Amino acid sequence: MKIKQIRSATNKIFYGGKTFLLDPWLVEQYGLGCFDSMPGNPYMAVDPVKAKIPMPLFALPETVESILSGVDAYIVTHLHPDHIDINMQKGTLGDVLEHNKPIFVQNEDDAQALKASGFQNVRILKNDGVKFADITLYKTPALHGTIKPSSDACGVIFKAEQEKVLYVAGDTIWFDGVRKTLANYQPEVIMLNACAAELRDYGRLIMNDEDVDCVHQILPEAKLYLTHFDNVAHASITRSQMRGALVRRGVGNYVIPEDGETVIY
Image (cartoon, rainbow, N blue to C red; front, side, top):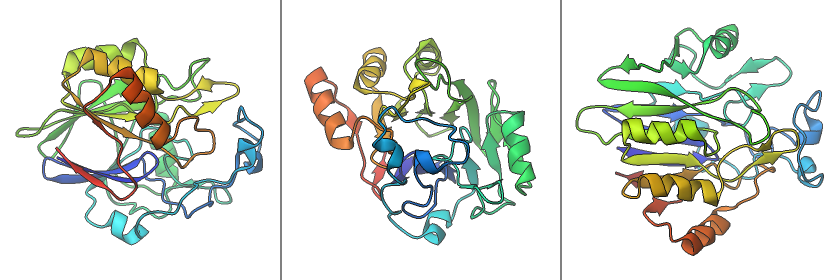
């Protein structure tokens, strides 16, 4: 297994002889715009200064063509605009992706939205697993907000012969659904979105250092891969701050890759 950090929550996962592109947010630097510029202002930043910062904050570490090269399937954990490109003018999703490739989504609503955008091979993740070649993908629960969920979201368990069990937690805070997933699947590698992004109406949307510590305490031998850093304006923890916080908490056995970096397990 290899995981390549692309940018924010976008990662390229090499697993079981297949290559997956996870949450493909491939727009150019600043291309999404800021919260204040989004039509209808659907998301309100806690800090009014952050509401005016255009996203993503950094450019991709390589070309879109290079990122898409060799990909066998896409996985989109939910349809927020920092997890798949949204064309605000046309109302379409994932315009730069290859629309004939398999794309895995969390539910029928997301499937219909992608089909309306021209995707021809949309597959829905299931709690009891869906097969892709010799790999089984299991949908896992997520809670995307401390006040209330900002949307439905999910995680994914990857299982295959001769591979470690991988848990992609997705956009979630620590809650009982994560604890049960850890207990049920005993993953050996765990990917956590952990920049503690927050919005006014929904609270903290994803994990902070305390949540990462909770995961570590349940499975201290598991290797933690921490991602979703330094590219959304509503984040409240940077890579550097997370490293310091985990030192203070005594959490080890983790990596926080830079954009473009590959980690081998």
